Image 1: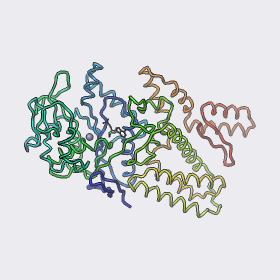
Image 2: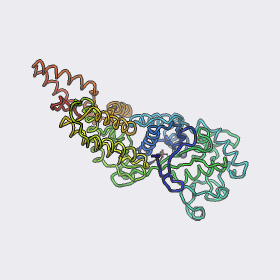
Image 3: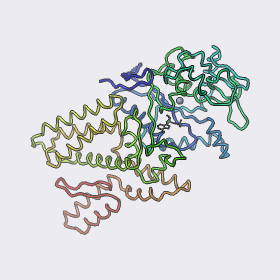
Image 4: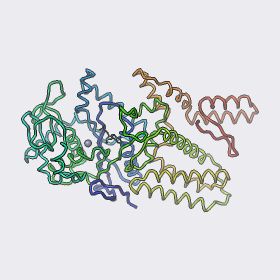
Length: 494
Ligand code: AMP
Ligand code: ZN
């Protein structure tokens, strides 16, 4: 079974097969580091993370490039307002972005490329376009891309050129250009703005040229896949194609992967609506990073997703259930003599197949996760009746392992993410009370909890019930609930 993905270019679902040595060469548009990342941004990066993790699980090697846009209009405006040089201003938010990605368990791309460190690559690309009269210099020293020279313009988004010419301008800026629809490659320097002295003159790069230059630098003129949120399809990705293919004369990315937008409580997220959340906002409200990750992955990437706080609570409960199950299956007494329930073996096998079929079918994360919960349900019933066999246990653990390679929520790192958020909040003078409370309940690691349970078992064996009760009470205060069952003691977090 191939891994099939919807390709925005052409509008069809197609097998994703790397062109060279089974290595998936992919480029994902990274953040513009002028502020903290919001949960919409992270929806996109999380689904790209699932793509990388699943491709690897399917045996592909990865070469994934992501840019950091560290110079642009908003950055210049904000840095000037803060009275900070732009590199200092962006360094802070780039660092914060990677801390947030770590909290969410998003793997780092193999290559992270910063716009300001790749200016010569960009100017060379513009010079090449200029040599064919595709790029031209306007009177003020800015450079533009002549869209009329690229007949394929619009092939990704399906926008028709005439419509663009008559209608809204592609690139809204105040510079002089031959056609309203031409877009800026290079913006002439202005007082008070960051700029570079280059063969093109003094100025700074446009946003689109940045991605073309860095993608081709690291992945070559043709590569397997390009990703980003749906808002980037037009004009950003359309412009990337136009610039790159005009220079290289070969197809740029073969496969285009776009993640649909996240809504919050049914509305477009915006500061004025009061429904705009950064990851840090949610961590400070006492939500766990794993629950945020799992929720943002619960709806397949091509469907619009509506983020709700109820969803976040359900997601935390779902993870608790999975973690409890994973521990239970590890310690369950697998009965070698028990007559293995054939129906259970078939179910585990079938659901493991469904798990892969779902992810192979355009990364259907919802169906993949549902297949795991079907096994959790059946497995729990089997363990209640003590009918699980060693083979069944191994089969379940293999499924959980594949599941976690992609979803990455079983290992509990929530305390660490919340602790970082609390430290950051304190340094910024923000209220961290709720998150600090959560930290108390998350303060015990699984190992510490298990050690305490061992001590409690030992106390009970010695009939020291006072000590045993004390331990139960201590655990309860730290949010850990014990359940005495016939297979021994199990625990879960509140
Ligand atoms: P930016 O930093 O604004 O360039 O955005 C970084 C990434 O987040 C881009 O791929 C955007 O398309 C994506 N993005 C922005 N807002 C949302 C949203 N509400 N839902 C999903 N992705 C988004
Ligand atoms: Zn880009």
